[in-house]
Length: 254
Image (tube, rainbow, N blue to C red; front, side, top):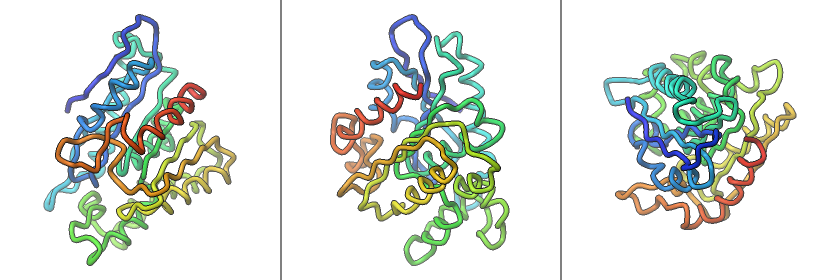
């Protein structure tokens, strides 16, 4: 597995962001952060865009996909010195299923101590709920079952353990990371109630969380891909509106 690394040019120690792309655990690539990576590096953030295994009809990737994300974090920590990265100032950004796994990084006992900030964009935070709403006829590719290898009734404990909302609700206290949760109000692929419920649960635990609902926006727009015109550069809307909010959040918490 490989990583795309975008580094600031100055020699000082920098905060770093682990970036996780979307694609229903079925598709997508680290190259989707090719617009955000240079933009953030120019503003003093090292960016590491992650590759992880993807599922197929015959090969579910849980728990391997989670192991890949954790190994990417371990790689970043192990190589922090050579990258001029301050390992005490790490954050994560994820869109769609990348948001799901970015949230998991802040909630899992083995990784949460490393992550100070999480930005989630149209993320999936309630895995059992997204399994239910992506059943036929709405979708025919059954992305969550292809991730997990079994349906929710067949693997209830595994689904809930890999679900950020369930993991959060079962924590005795709150996570230590700060959160910026962003969603479009016209998203028909991942409804914004996924973000709404995570935000509510974080606030119930007195966790620092900022919410940003983007009027008129759907899915895909946060990252860039040449074969999908719905995906946008940082300087295109709605990213042009999101970018200064995201930057202020990172400056405050990292």
